[in-house]
Amino acid sequence: MGDSATVKARTYGDFLNLTKEQTTKLKEFWKLVLDRLNNKQININEDNDKAVKNSSWRFSSVISRSYETQEGLKISNKTGEELKSTLSKIIKCDHPDIKAIKYLIARKWKAKEAYKMFINSLDYFSQDIHEQTFSIAQMNAFFYQKCKDGRLIMYIIASRCFASKYTIDDYLKFFLININNSYLLLGNQARMTVVLNMNGYTLANTDINHIKIMANLLPNHFPELMTKFIIHDAPWIFNSVWYVISPLFEQRTRDKLTFTQGEEIKKYIDDKVLLKSLGGSDNFNYQYFPPSEKEGLPKAYDDNYLKLVEERKDLIQSFEKLTYKWTESNDDQIKANRDEIGDQLASNYVKMSEYDFCKNIYHRLNVIQGYDNVNWVSLNENRV
Image 1: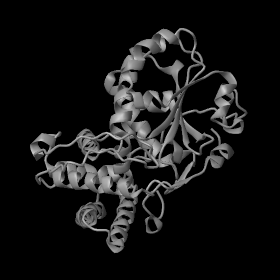
Image 2: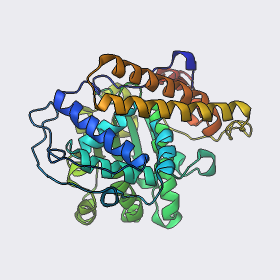
Image 3: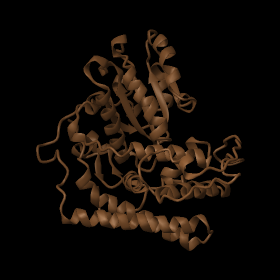
């Protein structure tokens, strides 16, 4: 992914610029999570679940007062150590607070509710998906360029979706592989825009299983990853389908849905990077090609990998200790030390990635040229 010596944890612009109230909620969240991961009793004080008022996030105030034991908030049956191992994996190159803030936003800055959601995700993410085991993800969806807001665009081609061809497990892998790929392409934006291209759509392309998976996983396990979902050029027959499937999406997700026809999509995507098939001027035609035999598998585990694993465990432990101190203090030095651990975790992840993940087609197309170095111009110069 690049030179690990220069790696800094991703902070995505102003994502960490929090108000005093939001910082308090973030500390409450981490205290709950770390107590659960260390099998401590969890206490919710009476002000814990007040939504943040008058913040830049503009969420309404909701008050919930409670005291609960750890058992009442346990959510997952996994041990603290098992959940801690998963936390280590999902942080990746992000500053750990980025994950926390996304869950807090999704639950209107209510620490207790965000905690429950996050622990459920840690439980879910105990599974591993590797790209080389599956190719459907390369056929029905791809990433290309950025929208006018500077966010990565994911295109899904409805006419290539056939429910009869794939199992629910297939679509689960399809979704997770594409999410893994998106992480490498996000750049300095924490969210992406999804375009569902409905050109050529028929009722045979209606796949309820795929829709259910997206409706569940996006809001519950990848909160705030998608900022807008554009359904483009939907034919009239889709109206009845939409009536059936729309209740599957929670309101927060439905609020991100936008229907466009013809030139309307150019309100969100500049003509020069909009695909010609959608009425734009860009001639790019996505064609998947598989990796070479040597390229297809991650690097075999060796002594260096084992050292990196131990290093990551030590870093997670240091992050825990500093986070506990930070939740009880406003000391700038503690915060700075904690941020430094975030950078070290990101650097460690870059070193481990060649063992844990396959290179994908965007590496092969030379779009991904290193850690957070994404070059779409290179793709246009070296088209397949």
